[in-house]
Each structure stands twice: as C-alpha cells, then as structure tokens.
Image (cartoon, rainbow, N blue to C red; front, side, top):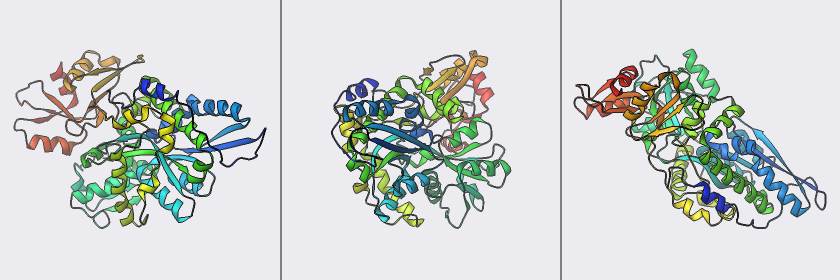
Length: 457
C-alpha cells in the first residue's frame, strides 16, 4: 500500500455503503419544508485539517450529501462554515451549542473533551484528518541568522508558542528531554502563530514552536530555520474531528454524511495531491509549495479518517502534559473517542484503512508548469535532477535521514559521508541532527546546498 494509507479505490467502495439512519440536531424548524442548519468550525490555515475543512468546503461534497438526504427527508439542509485561527474558539462555540462539528489538533481536542464534560456539553472525537506517527507536524524554528543551533541554546531565551497547542506540547517534551525546565529555564511567550512569527522576525522572540503550516511557511519565505524537528520525539501527533454529543445522537445520519464526505475528500487529496495543494493555496493565501510540503504525496502528514490505536494511545500520553499546565484535569480519552460514526460512514473499507501504515517518504521534485511531481529513490538522485533543471524547479523536497520528516531541499542541512568528495549525500531538517550524525560517522561533514548540487551532478 502507498504511504497515504487509504487508497482512493478503497474509499470509493466505502462511499457506496448505505447510510445508517438517525435524527436530531438543532433545526430551525421541524416537519415538511423545515430547514436544518449544520454549523462546521474549521481552521483554514491549519492545513492538516483540510479534508474536514478548507478542501472539503471547496469540493462541496458535504453539501452534495445533504442535498441528497434532504430530498429523501423532505428537509432543506444548510451548511454554515466558520473559520478560526485555532481550536480554542471552536471549542467555546461547541460548548455553547453554536457549532456542531469542529476540527483541531490533538492537544486542543483534549481541551475540547475536558470543557465539554465540565460544562455538561460533552463532545466526541469521531475521525482523524492528518497525522504523523513520529510527531513531525510540529517544529521549533529560529531566525535565519540566529546563533542558536540546538535546544540547549534556549536556556534563558524567549520562546513563542501557543499555550495548550500541540506545538506547545512538543516544546515542553523536547525541553524536558534536554534537561531544561520549560517553566523556569526559558521565557515562554503565549502568542497566536502569526504574532509569534512577527515576534521572531522583530527579534522579540528567540525561537518559535508552532504547528503546521507556520514552520514550513517561515522556512520557505527565508524568515526562519528549523531548530528542532518534532519527529525527534517519536510520538504521534494528529488533527481530528470532534462533534457535539447531542448533535451526534440526534443527527447521526448527518454526521455520517459529513464523515463520508471527509473520506471522499481524503481520496481526492491522494489522487490529486498537486491540485489539492493548489486549491488549498487559493483558499488560504498560503504558497502551494508549503501546502504540498505537508499535504503532498510524500508530505509530512498522512491523511486517514480512521481512529488508529497509536493515535488514541498518544492522546492518553498527552493528558499529563496538559494537566501539569493546569489546562485540564483528568480526561476520559476512551469515553471521548467514538468510532461508530466513521465506521458506518466508510463501511467495509474501514478495517483495511485502520490497519494500514504510511510508507517511508521519498524525495520529490515539483517542476514549474507541471500538474504532477516526480519522486526519486534517494536524495542524491533528486539533487542530480535539480542540478540539471535549476531554472525549472518550483520546489524540491527531501526526507530527513533519521526522522523521515520531509523538508525543502534548499533549506535542509546537507551532509556528505565521504570527506574525499564521494556522492553519498544526506539531508537533515536541523543543524543539530546533522551534527549528531557527523559525530558518529568519521569523515562526514556539512556541505552547503550549492556544493551538494555540484557534488550530485
């Protein structure tokens, strides 16, 4: 199976399975001629939620499902899409009964569960959008000309993050592994991603820990370099879909319509990764090259609606991190996770998709004017191709030699394993990872990108 765990064919088959029946939801009227409005909260620029947000909205699959249901039910179904910068306002609106379905990252999902229980407005985790089994969706970056080269350099420094986000969780865990107290040894700035990015550029923050697509965007724009790859933690990170329990109970068939539409959007993304990236770019204003870094055929994220045991287990490990920050108390993760709806929506394709795991990422080149990309078995082969087509390359991507995290080839730290000028070339997301590799491989050395291109050619 390919890296994108659900194949378009499997999802296509799943889409043919009839919907389960259900009723309920917050309708503005009941009976013949009534109107039911379903409100969906999403984060357009958190691009690992696009199959339940930006891309799904542009494709119109959910609206199509509801038109068909409306003809059967004699009801007019409307969809109201509400775009937010983070998961926190979505949770606030859900617990107020104003949003029915929302998508957000793993740490915000736990806060969603906790707030729902606290306010007696329980929610359920009903599907997954994008995930990375090693944690590569979060990255710590610093200024391009910064002298900081590793996490240990952050002692006494100002680090911007969004407290309660998955990126904050990555920062806390990474610092703890480096024997740095995240509360005492750094100055944490609680900022929204855009504010943190501006603070980094202005020099009022020394580093920024954020979730997609901010690290890749800043690196692509030449405004940051990677300091720490979240995949070094080797702990899964993901984004998912949550629904109000009352809505799920009363409008279960409508929720399954949404999840079926999400499954079809997932299949579309896999079959048309470049077109999907271009579509999301148009909707968000993000560069398509950045969207593709995360959501492409070999992107950092794998898109799969199934609730994999590895992801549920990771969610349980996240609870103590949020509890120590006094953001949640105890969270009943098993009670929060509810796979009944997505199982019915995807039908016979669910079990196969649940068992599938992503394959290793390959190096990839996106040439200007092309609607497809080309992949290569090794980073050296990619560099050789880039060297022959320098003016025609729109973007080139390579997987980190140790974590597998995809990164821009011209932003990677390159290492040659033969000090005499051989052609073994390895890319790393961060300088610290490259230096760690060199320490264990005599003769290896860092090579500037331009020299790596020359060596490969």
